[in-house]
Length: 138
Image 1 (cartoon, rainbow, N blue to C red):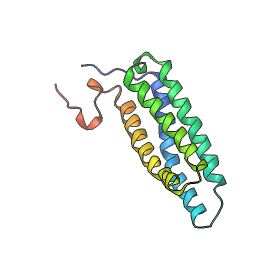
Image 2 (cartoon, one colour):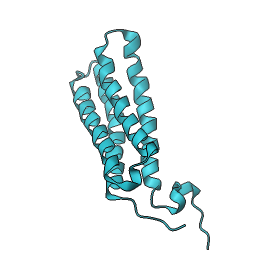
Image 3 (cartoon, rainbow, N blue to C red):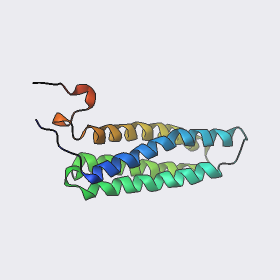
Image 4 (tube, rainbow, N blue to C red):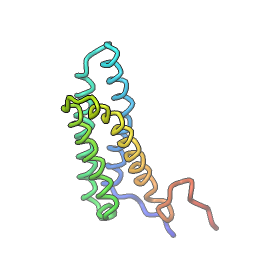
């Protein structure tokens, strides 16, 4: 099976998700600064707002290429955006048990974003398989 080049929209979504993934450890650091009194949560909130916008752009990019207009790609993009929206809402609840879901949801976001990144990375390989699963047959 011949490899096909990924669409421009898929490449854009790949890089948006990559930037989002870089933001996750940054967010953990910024939250830690707030928890341990080295700063406020303002930077954590600002970076989180930017990451929320990135998830919206990644979801919208899904609709700009025929190779991504399928149930799985749309659901993954939508799921990333919805989970990030929930992430933004959780701190507004004052109950500590609900607030404790904030870092747990961040881990779920990390897993989903890695899955989405690997899915976009696999496109263009024979059979659309990730690099570790591609075999060279002559």
